[in-house]
Figure 1: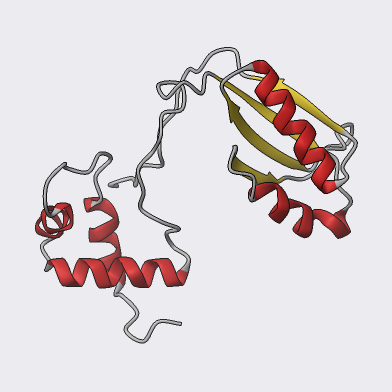
Figure 2 (figure 1 turned 30 degrees about the vertical axis):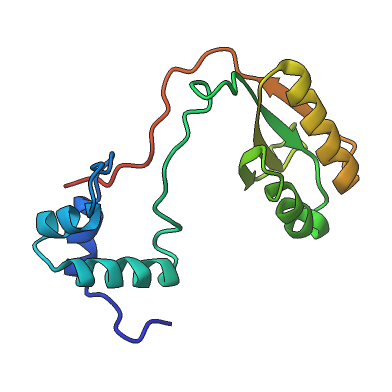
Length: 161
């Protein structure tokens, strides 16, 4: 694990100081460090430690796919045997058109346990992506639910309470 595990106080300060939108400037981490009351080097080291610890996955830009001409998206639900979930989930997650890939519990009437969100420029594109995933994984039982309207889309915000 981490040699110099960050103190909880540092972690909380840094996670609260990470902005929803990064400043477009030469040194955005310097601004975040000032907000947290620590040095830029300390901020970067704690962020690296948090990544190693699995607290954060990454800090990255968010593509608003609808604004970038990817106007169609679909949740595709897949019925996968429990023995194959790990392998199939990893395969599905490698498709660049898949933004999310989750395992969920099956409901009493619902046999689907893997969920993917796919993005394309057309309905045909969504259908083609789902077909390619099915061919690559050998999964034959799936359903595709197209998005009609987006009511909310945000990144996780750290609660300041």
